[in-house]
Image (tube, rainbow, N blue to C red; front, side, top):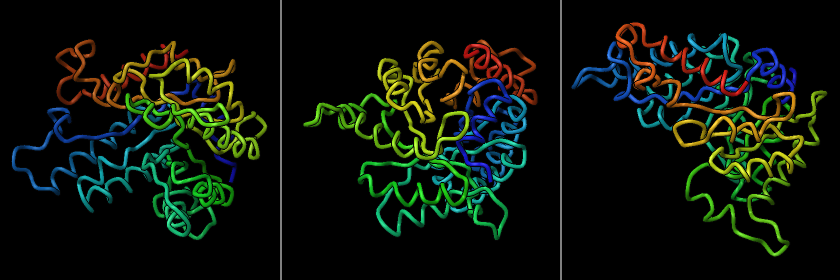
Length: 305
């Protein structure tokens, strides 16, 4: 299988944009045509959410290179929610999209191995590239130590998958740990970034990027620009665009001159676009809500072009 970093570069080049659509469903925000009625059974709620997610995938599949399901919004729905997540990941792959599972896993030893085996690998059953969840990539947490990354990077090598390591996250409280200075003059996030870059450099493909990526938020544009320079071989997953305050000018700091090197995530701004005044006209409010989603996606593509 072609390594993840190269597959991502090819997908971004083919679609001519770095947009990543985050799939973060909430029953209370579903369009009226799908919103569960008061007192609906768990099975009915899951059915509505699954249909919503399938329609999101269908709406953006020809426009963007990659989607990012957030596992938490399925986990809170219990076992049925996790089965729905599994079906959505498989469906997105069938529609030709790369899939990043946003689960932020991280642990030591055999536990990390189990997480890596569970999530990473979108190949056929029986192949080395198969995993039960079937994701092309996974977000992971490095703050238990550099040794906890090794099971994930080894799995990436054997399955053609990728990971995105939390480096400088978009939340306001990220400075509590990530910006703290170390004795060698670097901050914690810079030290993590240097580790990620060394791992990614070792897996670089012909387009210059490896399989080990980083998460750097759009809400800190100066640090995003610095991290782009610090990690020249590393794909950057950029959250924080749109609803969290990151602008198109901010996120462009994470891209190289070819428009490669980063994927820019938008979740609420796309999947719930029908809630935004700018996209609300009467035909959109019922069965045609996906037109708002598509228009929001096209607007984001244009903004980043």
